[in-house]
Length: 146
Image (cartoon, rainbow, N blue to C red; front, side, top):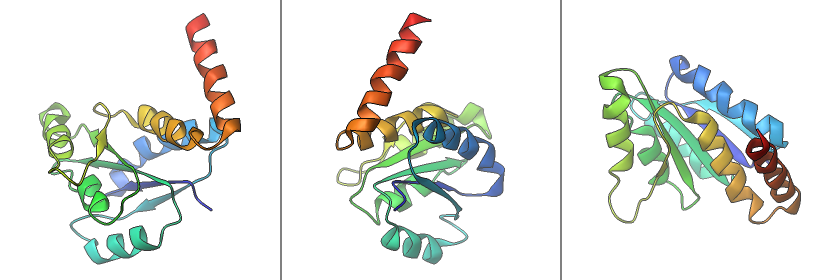
């Protein structure tokens, strides 16, 4: 079972996808990665989301950044949007993701914040996974110690 699904809109987003994957690997969280555009592959995206066994989705997108919202429209599972800096310093993508209508929420991290998205996904999974919870406590302890 894939607990986290990382979806990017294009291959140019894979660097951020790999950053998120690195955090998930560090915690031993199961994940899978897909490239599915909300604009170019809308039907394939909807079919993937509907059949995914993920508990959390991380969606990385720039420019119009429709991907996180398109995923959130297809599921009641948590969706974390990562705005990618492509143009306008990434503000365009950030605003596209963060301005979701009531009833279709997307949690949004900072521009290029793929690592924080993965950490948030781990926190969500840790609500029902004691081992992940213990790893998070240790991770935070080490970070606080410097």
